[in-house]
Image (tube, rainbow, N blue to C red; front, top):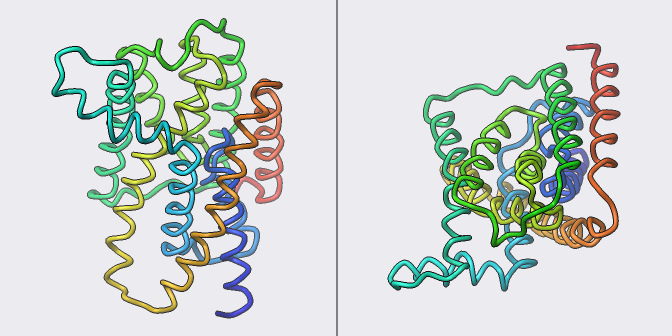
Length: 269
């Protein structure tokens, strides 16, 4: 691997790992860095391995919850009296369905994303302001209070994550906060939702990579996988802990500043 390729691997891993679960848009940051260093595109193999790393990080961090909601809870459907874990599982299912279906259709019909500086910046500013106003909502609910209607609303919000710069995590948290879910629970729910979403996106990408059958690709995949896993895991831990002390205002300010810098730097390209 040439030096530039190694640098791209490290950079992509760090950015994907840190930004995937924060409400600041991983796709927007990756596009910015990609354009900054004049890389022709975001390598598909790097994206797959980075997504796999972040996926394993969230599953590992929430392993007990993962077993409860994703492995054990589905079997509750066979029982007459369902427990709260089953209802949370169904909520996750309904919240995930819209973006998975839309993402699949975009892939099937080969719809091109509008990766323009003004689109990403405008999206980042608009959705960060939504997050700001949602965070003023009175706290009434925890994970067990999320209703079927709430889960569908969160799922609809999550569709807008397909807009570059919008932030999937940010949209899920925004919707949950508007519905009165407390900050930590809203954040956890967005992380639970990342499991089916990242799994679906990775599956679609990995089908293309398998066809390439390249040794170099697999070396890159393993390298990025471990790096993105480490950064994602520690970011999740830090984010969950810090939310007990602060609100989302700092992330809103950060996104607006970065969006403005992005626009100025690339001159509305």
